[in-house]
Image 1 (cartoon, rainbow, N blue to C red):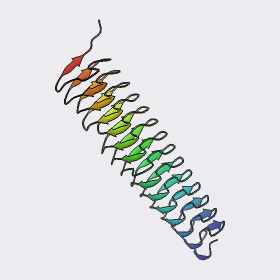
Image 2 (image 1 turned 90 degrees about the vertical axis):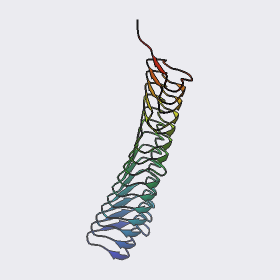
Image 3 (image 1 turned 180 degrees about the horizontal axis):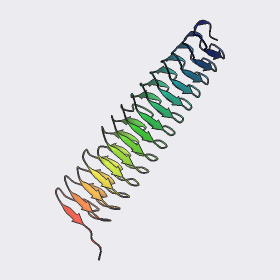
Image 4 (image 1 turned 120 degrees about the vertical axis):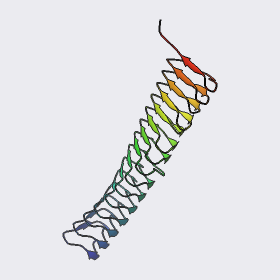
Length: 238
């Protein structure tokens, strides 16, 4: 541990921990923790944590957390969190969160949140949220929200909201669940559930199935199925 070029006031404990070029005020605890090039003020705790090139002021806690190339001020907490190529200022908390290619200044919190290809400035909070290819500046909050392919600047809030191929705004349980195109809006449980094409659906089950181009459905169950282009459906109370 700490065999070559260990910086002032640094600590290395464990087999080959901090063995090659550990910076000033660093901590490396665990097998291969902070092994090669640990930057100033960085912390690696756990087997294989921060093993290869941890920049300055980073934190990697958990087995294989930030294992390869953690950029400046990155935080990876949890088993294999931020494992490969975590961007500058990014945060990954939870097992497998932000595991591969997490963009700079992005946040992933929860098991497998933002797991692969999370875009710059994106936010994924919840179990298996934003797992694959979450776009730049996109937001996904809730279990399984925006699980696969969330577009740039899209918003999905609620369990299963915008789960697959989302490009607009989906708020509510499974709102905009599948194939919500860019500039679509779905607010309410199951609103715009399947194939919403640049439409607006507000209310539980509004525009639920195949809402077409620029259609508007307001009220529970309004325009529930196969609402045509430019159609407007409004459900009012008695």
